[in-house]
Image 1 (cartoon, helix red, strand yellow):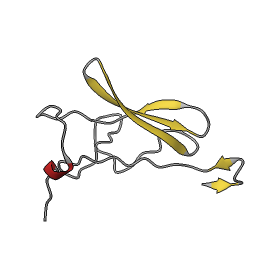
Image 2: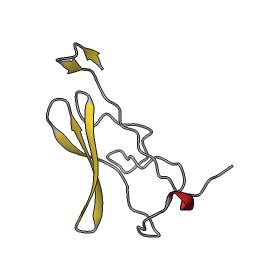
Image 3: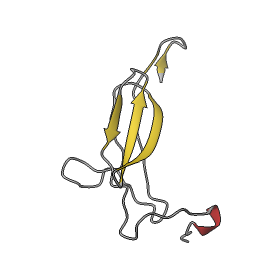
Image 4: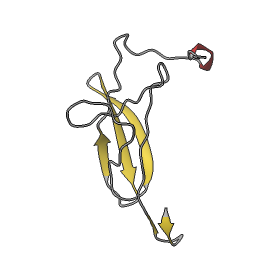
Length: 92
């Protein structure tokens, strides 16, 4: 961020990876993988993953007051399950 404390400005960059394989979940318009994304102008201030009709969506909000759905592939072939921190696979 840059600007004054009372009026922050700048550009935020979004990074999102899968814990299972460490690969990016962000996608471009054609469905190809993206290392990072700038989905909204301004500083990113909020992130939320919400399920809508069985599909997960990544919502991002910014300092300008806008909220958008970031293009991301959050589903898995194995489906969703809750993991304990001890269950996260580690690769060496």
